[in-house]
Structures are given as structure tokens and as C-alpha cells.
Image 1 (tube, rainbow, N blue to C red):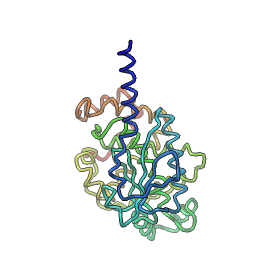
Image 2: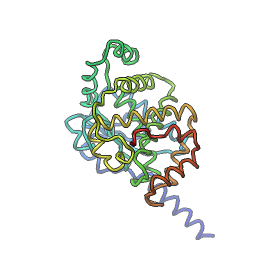
Image 3: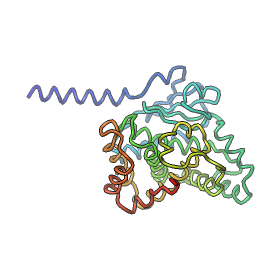
Length: 306
């Protein structure tokens, strides 16, 4: 009996250590610790960062939602990084592109990010009708940090919940990104204040209508797997993929609600490549068809593989 209790105690201690130690502290070196919330750790390149109240509130609300549906109390850190220090803490440019490390850290822009500025400059080519549709939710001065920092941070937070359960070696990156978009849609739609969802959706739908991609090099899911980091660094091509995942995530969430997030996370844990190795596309399709059914697979059909 004493042996049984000792094993239980060791398992409990091990779980608690894993929960607190998965955050990579090396990425906090040189940053100021900010005590603006007790829901997650917060660091910044500035000792007194400004205009982050809405971002912090959104992440707090999303954590509450994710903790509930995934039965977690996830510990993580958010790093607010200004443009000049971006390359020291993020794994890819441009400054302000939200990113999540596998080791419990999320990196967000601070101040007017270059990412937001570039997309704001691109709005000079938008019609007055399109600009009016955005101003309805953004106000007369369209600040796209309200999209890239306040909304897309929730997408990255979804990645952290997955990474905590599945680790670094996922089965498919496209499935990871679909899950991130689902998390983004679901959490923000469950906010008491729907202004973040309205801004997020208005800009996403504008980009889909505007179709600003031009000629893109990669279009298939296999290319997304094999050339992921090249695609990621080519923001235009990466954005093209993300709009496709976003549209599918909206349809799935409208059809299934919170249950689809839980099912996909459970499925990702089940097919974790560290446990079963990499499986081929045909086997993955058959497993997903059995797990999710025909209606879901029809929504997930990728029409750009030819």
C-alpha cells in the first residue's frame, strides 16, 4: 500500500513539474516582467508597455474558454516585442506577426507593428465601399494591430494548448493550422463583447474578397508540409493558406460548435507522430473519415491539389 501511495505522489509531482516547467525561460532573457495580469506570465521589451489592455483582456477571456473546454489550467507566457527587437525573440519576421513556440511562449507585437503597417498601407488600394465596411468596426483610423495582436493572439494561444498535449512533432501542419483557426473563431465568438470578432471577421472577409495574393508558388497541402517555413516566411503565400483554413474553420464551428475543437484535439493526440510515426495521406484521410464523418470531410476537401 505504501508503494502505491508513493507512485501516486511521484506521478502528481511529475505532472505539476511538467506543467510549470514547459515554458522556455531562456526566451525571457533581457525582457521586463510585467505584472498586468495573474492569468498568465507577461514580458515586454518596454518596462511600461502601453495600450495592451484589450489584448490582455482577450487572452484572459480565451484562456478561460480553452481551460473549460479542454479541461486544462494552462501556464504560458506572452512576450510583447517591439519592432527593433523582434528578431531577437521571434522565429520569423516581419515584426508583429503573432507566433507561438512549442515551449509555452507566445510572441506578439508591441506598439505599431511593421506587420500591421504593411497591411494598412495596402488598404490604399481598397475601394471606398470596402474601407467603409472596415471602418464600421475599426473606426475612422483603421489600426490593424487590433487584428494581428488582439485577434490573432487567440489563434496562437490555441497552438499552445495543442503543443502542451502533443509536443513538437505533430502529424500534419495543415491540421495544426486548421485547429488554430478553429480556436480563434470559437474563443472569440464566445467573448461577451463581440467587437473583436467583428473586427477579425470583417478584415478576414475583406482579404478573401480582395484576393491580393497575385501569383503564389505553393497551393497544395503536401507543399504546406514540405515547404512550411519557406511558405511562412513568404507572408503572402502563408496568408493565402490561412484564409482557406479560416473559411473552413468558420463552417465547421457553425455546424458543430465547441465539440469540434475537442474532437480535433483528441484526434491530434491520438495520431501524434511521436507515438505512431508519420502516416501517409490515404491512411490519414481514412482515419479522419471514420472519426469525423462525410460531412466534415466534405468541408475539409482541399480543391487546390491539382
